[in-house]
Image 1 (tube, rainbow, N blue to C red):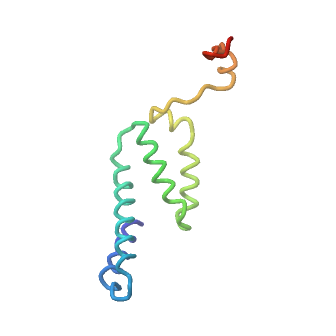
Image 2: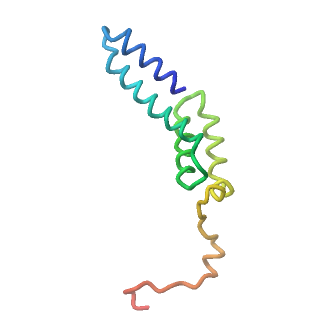
Image 3: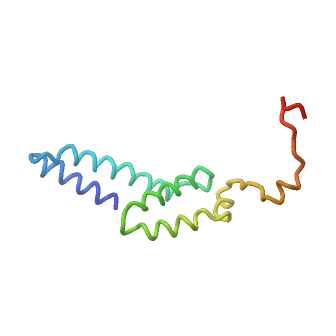
Length: 112
């Protein structure tokens, strides 16, 4: 998809530059190269919490395009599951029952 951005950008920059397509072509080349590099980097990212964020960002990049939006939404919903976060080493918040069973700590300066 981002390869197409670069290809259209090259066409606009080289062929349509006499009609004012040069700046738009440069912008498309830059966006396509930047986002494409992020997608390629996500394939080689290790299993770390920051990599979960990188993958989530790549999933979100697919939402604005009409052809990929349904898939990106479904994958995004699956990506938010606790099992996926635990796999990447993201610590999950305590359940409400565990929080209610834990003793409340007094805040400094409240006089408790």
